[in-house]
Amino acid sequence: MQTTEPLRHNWTKEEIEAIYQKPLLELVYEAATVHRQWHKASEIQVCTLLSVKTGGCPEDCSYCGQAARYHTDIKVQALLPTETVIAHAKKAKDAGSSRFCMAAAWREVRNNRDFDRIIDMVKGVNELGLEVCCTLGMLTEEQALRLQEAGLHAYNHNLDTSEAYYDEIISTRKFDNRIKTIQNVRKAGITVCSGGIIGLGETAADRISMLLTLATMPKHPESVPVNALARVKGTPLENQPKVPIWDMVRMIATARIIMPASVVRLSAGRIEMTEEEQAWCFMAGANSIFTGERETLLVTPNPGVSEDMQMFQNLGLQPMVKEKEAVCTTI
Ligand code: SF4
Image (cartoon, rainbow, N blue to C red; front, side):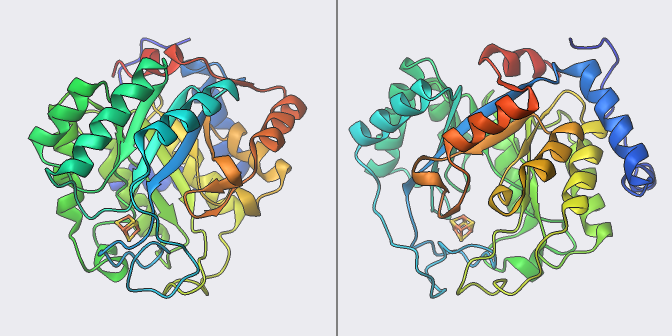
């Protein structure tokens, strides 16, 4: 399925803008064509995301209900016991997931007993034959290496938004901190999952700039999540307007064209989309979704697994087998 065409890492802002601004149907047609050259379009990777430590985060990401400083309804939960996490992973595997992502609401990883426990979780989930992914905040090269040795397949660290707009959204860290962690993950030989969120009040130029940063990395992230802001009550962005579906479709299609080998993940925001709207995203080149137990994606609502499987059936889609992503990541 993979083409022999080389991947480009020298995209310019003007080129990406020209793609992003194409007439919508032309853009979707081009993205769908590229998608079919690089992937089996009927296959969608199903990833399960579990929050292993929830809330109480010292960071101030304006979109996040887990930041301790915002008054949200989210219940703080200390790091889950390893056995509980493994039991969730088994259940996810039985439900058709090939990838299991563990998220902890930390600013950064510290070399303490909690990190030792994360290492045990990674080992345990890896032994189940699932691709293991973590999102734990900032990471040093040594910590990334420990995770890699434990069997970590991917590390999620989103850019969130453009470098220019970053300070409007988060003040407790810098865009460069994100890039540094991604570099540490790469150096340790772990695959990178990195994308962003739209609907934060950013402009089209910010979206294009974020895509430019991703597509000009020496190696494209193997996974590129595209999130629509999930508006959480109590956060500074709770009153942002809902992201128009065509904005999501544009982002996904542009990401698909400029990073053709990557898995593009339709992430947060699906709960507010109809099945037809999600179908547009798949047509534009999205080939991965998150499911979460208890029908949540971390702390925001998400469609349930049975609903997703019904959607797959309606659209003629099927869950991707685990090895597929490994094939697509040789970039
Ligand atoms: S997005 Fe992550 S780092 Fe930011 S406040 Fe939420 S949990 Fe903390």
